[in-house]
Image 1: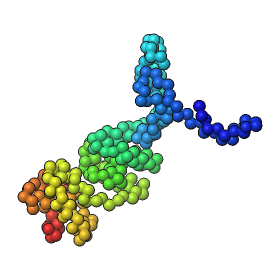
Image 2 (image 1 turned 180 degrees about the vertical axis):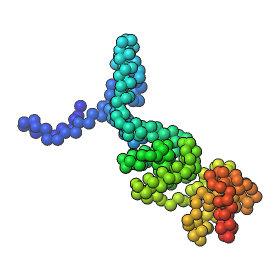
Image 3 (image 1 turned 90 degrees about the horizontal axis):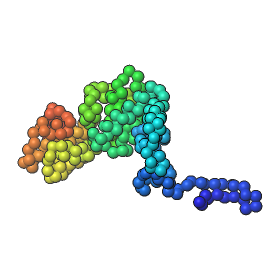
Image 4 (image 1 turned 120 degrees about the vertical axis):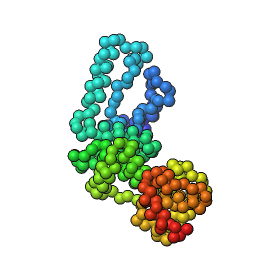
Length: 277
């Protein structure tokens, strides 16, 4: 193997060495696609960051032959103690449960891996600052995930996150304000136009109405009407007005349900948008 060593040709003293072995590993009973020396990548969504070893569940030896009954019972006991030894304190047990909930929410809300990593990072920071004491783990998980969505400008409402995990919106809101203040988060302003695609998909409206709604929002942005308004509410109102103009009428309730806001919000925002349409 070429070890990339720099050594003295007279005495053999090694001055520098870079001995990363990148040759394919020997594989016992596994596919040829998984022969890397590096192993799986580190991840914040795993409570041990993916760095701990795992006793494989296949009861076979290195040559592929089945193990004896005595050895099988020993491995079962070793696997159980290996699983127990990974969680050494209440904080680690808390973290393991919370990260499992983040992965479940990621699948339910169809979020990217980057968002789940960000949510795991925020929850770890909250746990370090002892913010979990006296609060629901599920609520803090939901708040961390919602904060990660806000930071990445992913259009997910706090109601969607709360309903997905089965926690009251009030609890999630309180936890979000807590981590926002204690972790000193800086959130970007949500682009109202980016909310159009999501609401239009939920409400099943045509592409023409989407384009017309975007034009309405662009015009409202130039006239500074969007400042301080709920982005989902403004996007829903623009879609509602665009639908009326195109003759493809959707009720305010349909649009409000698709956006996750109330009919009153849509009605009030329509008043300000009608002035420019």
